[in-house]
Length: 238
Ligand code: PXL
Image 1 (tube, protein in one colour):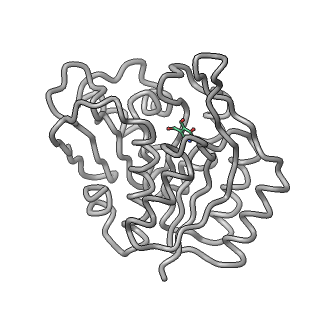
Image 2: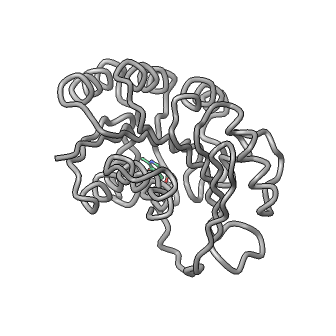
């Protein structure tokens, strides 16, 4: 079977994180593996705010060793990393094992949280992981963080951000506007491979059930790459 791994947080609710990734890998008929970086849960005593419990460094390294040294992968994705050592270990394993099909989901915020999880950590992620990424999949908030642009509220601004992020090293940038672009009548995302832009538009589905949409999208892109699709086809199918 074709093998694929996620380096991500566990979301006890099953909607996002590695649970969403593994379900997505299964839909693509792949053999999925997971290295847990943090355990995320929602606090019933505090308006269901997210609580994040990082795993210790040795536990993460042991999992990465099992996956990359022991089994091997056709593709990998990373999601919520949560600590500086998780960023550094991800860099080390993706680089050491020459993983070309690496999708970086630069998780910086959870839906409803509103604020960046940790700005310093985001800078390290940008420096160490962007240059290794076959595809990086920021939402509008993450695209603003990665590009340094203050506001991204039009397709033109999405394109400007994509160009800046590509210049920082990612081979392909896929910015998810989704339903978030102000005044949008469609779900609108922007693809940029360093040369060509493509705007992907589809019907906007009005729903509150969007928890984990970003994780699922990035997992589906990685799964498409593992199956041998071109980057554009993997993104478009995702
Ligand atoms: O959707 C972002 C996200 C990623 N990873 C984990 C999460 C969440 C949001 O809840 O819990 C583990």
